[in-house]
Amino acid sequence: MGLREHQRAPLGGVVYDLDGTLVDSRDDLADSVNAMLGRLGLPQRDPVVIYGFIGEGAERLIRRSLGPTHEVRYPEAAPLWREEYGKRLLARTRLYPGVADLLRKPPDARAVLTNKPGGFAREILRGLEVEDAFRAVIGGDEGPRKPAPEGLLAICAALQLAPARVLLVGDSVVDLATARAAGVRVCAVTWGLGERAALASADYLCDTPSELGELLGRLAT
Image 1 (cartoon, rainbow, N blue to C red):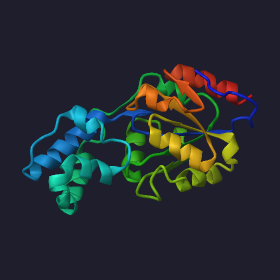
Image 2 (image 1 turned 135 degrees about the vertical axis):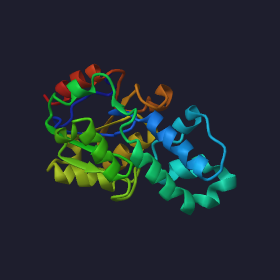
Image 3 (image 1 turned 60 degrees about the vertical axis):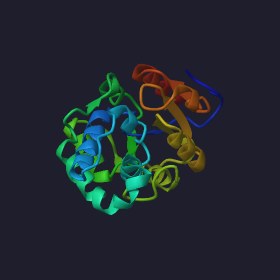
Image 4 (image 1 turned 180 degrees about the vertical axis):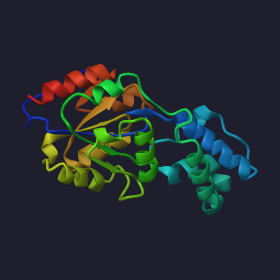
């Protein structure tokens, strides 16, 4: 579970990625993309293919789903996708099993940093009844998207914690790169969208939310 767990500042706060870390939103995202493609008169995509486009923000998701031939239609496609996704934010999106319990464990200084549009992120957290667990939420349309470090550093400041006392938890190499750029420790989780082998360079690696809860307890002491 733990990698390179040596003497460091006690943990004061934790910042979570959203999609693939706290929530399983793959089906709603894929359904929204296919609804967008249908309105554009374009062929539907296999949902598994769309899953591979998730994690770097709405624009990348849309452009990749359009593909090189139709990417020129992005300005037309983007508002359609937002409309379709707005209809089904919580149709099939759920917290991963064990996450609700995890969010009851210290540290209480928690935040969300996601490349998903911030309004959508907050609506999902509210609908799943966990919004109050977080002191801050920053979306990909509210600052430079991950892996740029500015959003993570802004959250550290909002939590009034030095980066050395914060842990970023995510499921992708984008999260790892974000943490490195900000000087923050990072825990990769394997229950989301990322491949385990690609996450091996994280400071910590957890396979379940309960393992992550145990890690948070250790790091806080």
